[in-house]
Image 1 (spheres, one colour):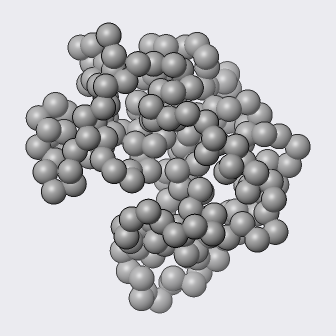
Image 2 (image 1 turned 135 degrees about the vertical axis):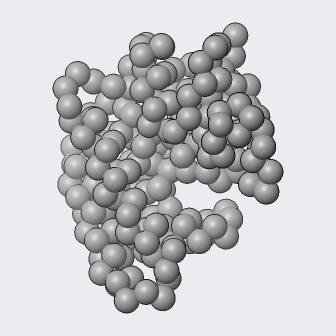
Amino acid sequence: MAIRLYRAPFSTNVERVALALAHKGIEVESAVIDYSDRSPVIEVSGQELVPVIVDGDEVVNDSLAILRHLEERYPDPPLFSPGAVLDIFMEWFDAVWKVPPNAIADDPGGPDVDALAARMDGWLDMFERLLAGRDYLLGDFSAADCVAFPFLKYARPVPPPDDDPFHVVLAERQSLDGRPNLAAWIERVDERPQA
């Protein structure tokens, strides 16, 4: 039986789950919603955000919760490694890394835009160092790559495929200049299949 994935076009959080599902070789049935009509998602999950999966009798929403569910239910091939590093990375990415681009998208003329953009840029240097001598963020392909790639891929000098303000911020406020490890990682993960 296939997992049903509720998704919407260009969703970075859905892309996280799509990478994980393909990595695990799980059969997927997609239910693509329109942002103007979230009723199918509300009906199945009681809330309006994608991604949502229906896996047998279980309904799981939130991309990080879905990644953890997939790992527990379908452990091979793994996306999680023993220890706390991956959990810390995932929580940091969502609770800290996503703050500046969200704040800029919410108030593009705000007084803190330059400082927030500088934080985003400085973190790209951290990713560049993290990728020195390795193909993926924590060694082997893992949930860390699923979590970060849909956001960091916008550093490529390619216009976003949509006009979502958040995606525009990601494209305009990130650069791969002087970051060959990060550029190679983006290309490497971009070549991986997605559900």
